[in-house]
Length: 299
Image (cartoon, rainbow, N blue to C red; front, side, top):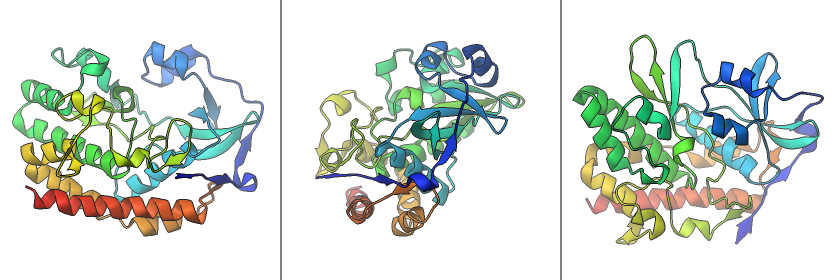
């Protein structure tokens, strides 16, 4: 089955006659690769702050906003999203989250600029390779912190059934004063909760979680498989990092998804979740909680 959202135009903020920022201006504000900026060039000044606008009018609006709501309920750092009509187009605005005075930002696929042995090929990433590279460049204490944060983010993507956590949608920030690397905010989660590329909640998508970055082997992506009917990526993480993965599973499943969703429908976002869509989303959380218990029984 498929599920939809509705929009309440009376609650959506409207912005008119705004001109795009030039690419030169965006580069002066945001660490972003030029090739990516050519594709994502819809930046505007709103209330004296640079905002990125993404034109959408379907369930992908909810994917971003719900992911933010889930992250904030778990005290996870997330970009901020609001539904808006900008120059007559409906979509999402998101204020620039980068603090370039303090940090330098890298997408996952740009980390080789900081860590020379980091994989450079876009489709070659696995969590295992990433962890091995960190272990080569950093001492165990720093490496532990980075791996812990990445596992938590990965398990969060599993819980929210994020289908597009590709290397460009995962970023890191380097503290210019301490030279400490950290995981950046969660962002670009529009294909979460079984939302397909057509912008519809699709329960067919939920039959198998296919992360853009597998844990160990790229065949996980091309030919995903299950262990005892459970996701092999999370299972492999549990085997190799049992304490950190169980901690992450306990953390994400501590979320009261019913409360978050009930609160979400009362927010002034302009997004309406019909009853059947709301029930569907609550059902996803129940499924993930059940899967978590089965996973922990097998290790």
